[in-house]
Image (cartoon, rainbow, N blue to C red; front, side, top):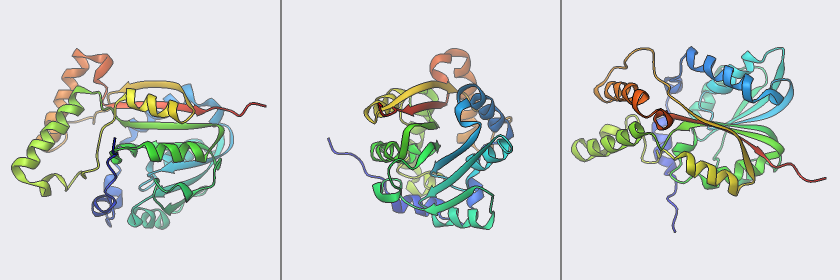
Length: 259
């Protein structure tokens, strides 16, 4: 079966912008929730020094937050990678100790040497690949034995996420591609928890923790589409709690080599 390739030109058209920080959409409450989750699940990585990959880093908002949070407890020597030069330029204008970033394509297997990292973060990155298997295979190769992969992504099994994508396709038919291309690319594909579990197993990554979250802004966002989705999430939280989380969270560990 043929695999749909990522349209890299479309990614650059949307994200290679001078307003790179406009895509930092998560607020302080989101990061506080994430930090509490890390304290429960990632203790081996919260002390000592670790080499970290932030895959699809954008402005580095995720890892920058964690570097500050762990200050005095752990050192995350982090390399951020993004396909958009404007994102890397933003990082260079806002230097942070222990954080560097480079322009690169996560589907390029030669981007890093094998077994380079103790931890790889995929913060809302993999849904930008219609088929993320090559990216996951590379990340697994770049991880050291015993290293961890943290994934946080839109939940492709969420009823509201699926409805949202259907509505977007309808809007494209009625209003044209230019309407939706202002906030999304043709690449965006919400993958299911089941798919991620299968792909991780194929790459010798054992799942340590998995769950779904409902991440909502504190107030209803502006715009018909975003506002409708906000209230639909609130409704499904009451009806289908096991399925309704709009965000999936996974932590997996690469098998250690036998002695």
